[in-house]
Length: 84
Image 1 (spheres, rainbow, N blue to C red):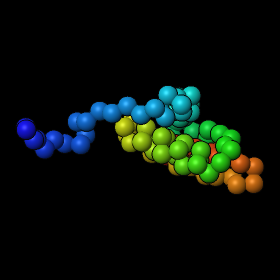
Image 2: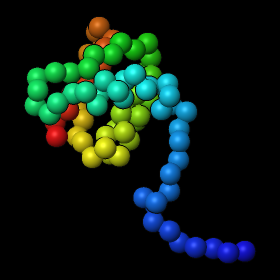
Image 3: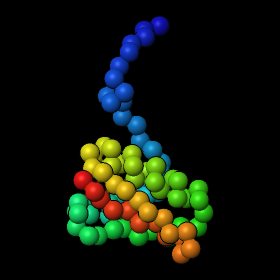
């Protein structure tokens, strides 16, 4: 058995949710920092919100951008905007 310790950043993995949220991630890429724009997404359950946020934050970490989100519970919408 050959065991090595490698850097976590060198490991590439693909997630199924990437394809599920591909339109959202493409819209996030089009946002400009401080541009006064936000992406608005409707959701049906809290589980969807958590999955969306996880996908967006992982994507932003790879792209080295800063994304923040704000959730409107009454209208069941979440807004993502780019900070950096």
